[in-house]
Length: 259
Image (cartoon, rainbow, N blue to C red; front, side, top):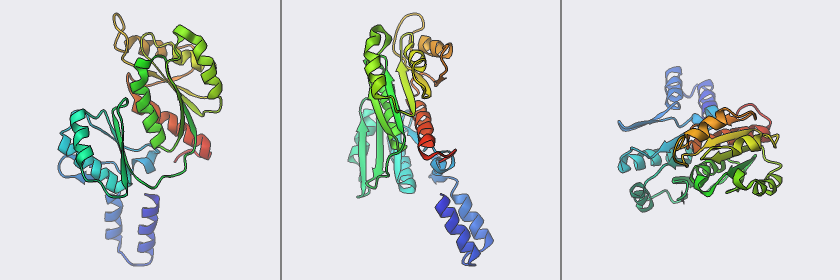
């Protein structure tokens, strides 16, 4: 977006376009309409450092494909979350631009479509889960952090029921810039990790567990009540956790306030 705005202002300065045309073009940079269905925030990554993701749940599969392809054309990549098998089938049969690749993560229920041109990765995010049942939300966080340009280390099934499994993983992750720690049941693991590491920890409560406080509620309450200092996102909010961790890691890597 910054390069496009620079080009517009330089064209205006050279007298190639008038003031009204310049203002019109700048307004067009704010969003892109897709018929009467959607208004894509295609400049979000430039504005706040986090790309817009397309939530597949609740969307007609044809509308979802049109929205996703429009985002891909405008920005060079698109993240689709919570995609169904029926929606995925349409994407896999669709004709994509020749220079683009489609990557499906079945655990995360995500699809990423991007141009073949890849930027160098900066920043390091660590992702941990208490159990294997927590992997879906954690994988969503991993997909998002990687798509935002970070390297990711991950270790799964290291919960407090067998706490000895955690320590070798933390040693391997001693240089990460931010952690995402996913846990269901009573949600203890993020507080434990936050009490052991100096990097920021994002607690990701997961809707595993049953009985009183099941479906992630006990995990959420436990993380919010933690004596350790950590940030907590909503239940199963893998996208938010991954994006927040990546934003921290990128800022540390580039030494800037905003990207």
